Image (cartoon, rainbow, N blue to C red; front, side):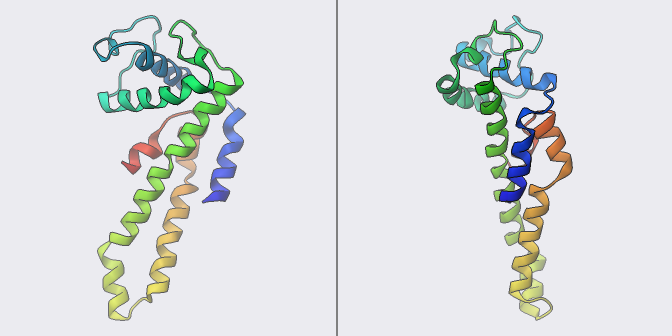
Length: 162
């Protein structure tokens, strides 16, 4: 898992799609406007168009964003991408992906066939554990999530984990 995270951190300074600015703008919207205006703010073409729970997630992130670089929270700062902003936003994707890994680990422990096979003598408990960890590692190293979340810039790993 740590190796996968280290590789993903190499993408911090790579290509940034428009979704990077979309999420920066959503941070600005949710940090500076009341919830009643989140879906009607029109300074930018990147209006908040995700469900309210995601808006609250962006609001939560904005609490930390203000510490890192207050300018990223200015709605009028279109295409703002200081080094601190890039580092912050990329780090949030990396850190929130932990929710996916926790969910996958929980799933592997709850999956019915693992306990059935282990108790029937077909598979040892140790092998079940190793299989579960292999699944977590495969999730952490998923190339599709790497491209969409860490290069293109989205939070799909976190959303899958929820």
